[in-house]
Length: 249
Image 1 (cartoon, rainbow, N blue to C red):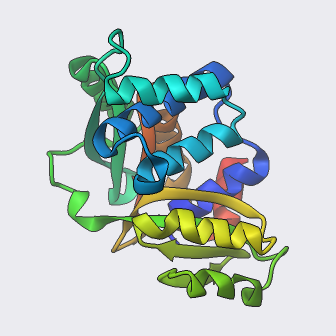
Image 2 (image 1 turned 180 degrees about the horizontal axis):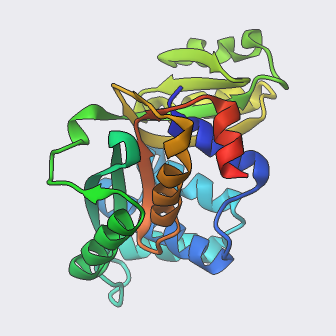
């Protein structure tokens, strides 16, 4: 499991999502809008939209907000702002590759602010294509191994999951992007409590990060994740979970 997946698991346990509910709803609405525009308004045939809507429901986002975001994405709302997807690539301390997915109505503003977040925290913004080759879109489900056994996750394999592995008391279930909703539903129907279930960019190669560089790296990652326009941050670092806990404390 990548260090970033471990970081997501630790944040979940600490309840450290977005500090501001309004900021979270804005990010979720943008994700729904873009997913609907790119793949259509039917979640059954649009895995990205199904994932975005599910996350919005988990955050208790009102149904009207969800439906309005879908309408904006499909063009049914004539007053909708033009939100576009922009991907930024860069490096954090220790040479860690970082891929940032942003949803913005002002590409120039977002680019300048993302660059500043990299540089002031010891990272650097790279050229397009500099790190994207190392990441591939997958569905990733995290399950607390202290609460569930591997046998309980067999249903995920039966429903087409590509892999189930364990690292530092967390199971990681990997799926093809289009299979994520089905595998998630099967696990939930089997009574498995999920820590998270997301479409993510999974790294092919990972870099071990020394604990001395870990705090600086997390400052880069957290700074990017807290930016209003950032939908997701992916990184290829690997680190011992205990060290990650200490750095996040």
